[in-house]
Image (cartoon, rainbow, N blue to C red; front, top):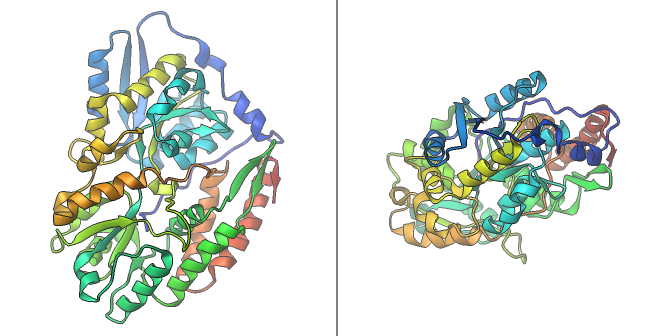
Length: 441
């Protein structure tokens, strides 16, 4: 469903220390010492457009300046930030995505900035705001959100008398029709288990939850099993392509030439389609993310589908200024427009509660053609259905690496989805215990 995510940073926690104590330890420290004069805040990020945003910030602020360092990518960020935290020279501000926030909190690396940003909560959509929080405390400011939807080939669907799938049952039924004509309805890359995660999230699963001072782990709850059933049926019936994102251009060509007819994506992934397509411009349309039968619309907020956040580190000596700078970058109209544009920024949707005015900039008229205007409503509607109750555990990146190996076996039919979930239940409980983290499950 999505390109392989970076999942290899080392998630550490002090032995025998419960999460509540860890989270409490993340406030205060050197970050409470505020400078009385002009300050410079180091800021690390990798997204296109950030240099321009930093330049605009510096031009409009006399007493606070940002010093930007562009990191190669998300994986490099986790490695470099890990080293910097250990060495005691972490930047004040760092770009990250939601799945890493709990890990950094569990390591005591982030500052609690709730007192500086809490009053701005209403400016952001609920899903994005939750992505920068752990146990109700804010450790950063959301910078983008991820409206999720289906993009599908209208010419192929019309040719075979199909409508955009409203439910996962519809999706499977359409896949069976397309299979007769040599077309796959989706692609499952063997190295990318995000499909299982996002469908579980949508189905109401909670792989991690906080219960008092402990983590509760459950990979076999009703939501996870509901998601597993859908995925297993798609795999058992050979409705999915198995193209690896290692050759991303080849995956895109397969969509472009009609080998695979749909994707569940967010706005930023359209850029890759536009950059690689040559044949199918104007033949794509958006439809809502499929629902589980009888359930209201609900879209996942995890993995690559989630937005980015600007985190404030505990080692920062000017926490208040850092928090205010992060808030400015996420709410200033010029900064938001810069990042929302696929030309000047990353083509991502803002994390703002009222982001409808940016929808047109974040989706591609070239890709959608006459379906461009109707697509705006699909994107806008999806912003109001994002999951807000999903927790990323303190070993989420290590867990993801383990799940990645099992997912490859699922895609190749060497084991079932429920086999993988059972393995992850046992593995994750053992892993958390080995890190000295209190766990139930």
